Image (tube, rainbow, N blue to C red):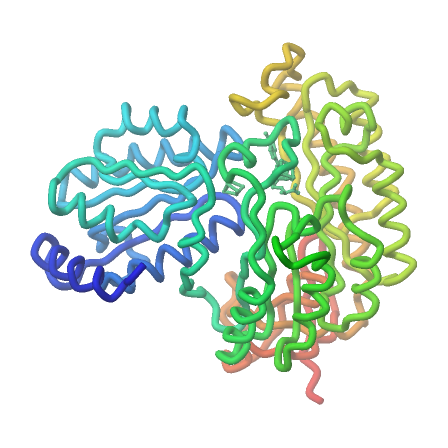
Amino acid sequence: MNYIDQEDALNYAIKEKLGSNAKYHIMTYGCQMNEHDSEKISWVLDQAGLQATDQIDEADLILLNTCSIRHSAENKVYGKLGELKAKKRERNLIIAVCGCMMQRKESRELVLEKFKQVDIIFGTNNIHKLPDLLLQHLETGDRIVNIEHSFQATDDQLWANRYFSYKSFVNIMYGCNNFCSYCIVPFTRGREVSRPSKDILEEVQTLVDSGVLEITLLGQNVNSYRPGLEGDYNFTRLIYDLAEIQGLERIRFMTSHPKDISDELLKAFKDLDKLCNFLHLPIQAGSNRVLEKMNRKYTREDYLRKIYRLRDLVPDIALCTDIMVGFPEESEEDFQDTLDLVREVEYDAAFTFLYSPREGTKAARNPNQVSQEIKKDRFDRLLDTMYPIFEKKNKALIGKTLDVLVEGESKHNGRMLSGRSDGFKLVHFEGEKDLIGKIVPVKIQEANSFNLGGERIHD
Ligand code: SAH
Ligand code: SF4
Ligand code: F3S
């Protein structure tokens, strides 16, 4: 795809229709995959001569990059589209909706029918086509809908406007083949496709050359990374190859599936200084009966074995997980298994969810759904169990010195900076703004369930 040609045509059309300073505003819902897609969308629009704005009222084009993972995620988008209806009555505005919701026929049709003010709809596999679609809309005034159901190699040629200069997301694969029985992602993102390792290594080298210190490799299940035509090349080999890149300080990845995480990858945490001592390993539920119904393909014993093996190799590894309560047929006893597992593993952090039935998935067809009241009660009890554990783990760091990649000024206090430790702990400390984007040692003095406070050590 040649952006230069498009840029001319599009620039001309936009200038004619919208004036010479056309601005866009992107609202992103959902996971890191979507955040990174928004960075790509932003780059594509910049190439087409538009400018980003964080002020919604200044924007000529508003894009909603949507998520389908839970009912609540979709509802947020419907709510926002309702608000935009009024804005569009007041002024000339183009509204585009993209992302996972638009990959689903049901949500797409609902948007088409109920929100007539939406001008452009596209999916997760055709970001590269956005300038074309915008041009078509500007020329015809028609509503433009363009969805591709499988991954398009052209999308892999896109660059991205990284929101941070010192840390970046890098896709290593797209889609998911696992079909966990509750999950919509295989339906929205399609089947797994791994990027060639050469492309990933080149992208990371370019990022590091521009000053990036930390990369987060993205995939729904990074452990099944298998680039075609590269023999037995796999995720662990990719990590070792990336660790060779001079100037790259930190490697993170997400997400890892417990059934596929290999011993060689666990060993890499010990071998490689650059691989951060942090693992996000979603368990989802502690009961084997529920895990089987979820189609997760591991037992709690398999999971715990991997955790113990990793803790043997790297005793201070920080562990994070995803847990869902109220999966169909989950009994009180099943839920107690989840609480037991949480107490046994002692996670550092967790993402917790109320199970949300997603149309088209197997679990949504189960007639024995758990009531919302029980889900909420279990959710509260889960948090009551987890928060003291997070606090205990964080308090154990008091007195230790952690290397912190400084990300910005603290939201609550302008004199304070905040950043992330190697173990992904949020650390606040006093310091000057010129430290942003640097890795500095911080001695931890206080801690609660969610963050740490400390003092910068001058070496
Ligand atoms: N690929 C990642 C997860 C992506 S979705 C993995 O397998 O780990 C992120 C999290 O959302 C999941 O781990 C799960 O805990 C949660 N989730 C997915 N579908 C859900 C649903 N239908 N209801 C509630 N939570 C859900
Ligand atoms: Fe969804 Fe399971 Fe795939 Fe994760 S591994 S994206 S939870 S189907
Ligand atoms: Fe991510 Fe939501 Fe899609 S979690 S992959 S944006 S459904």
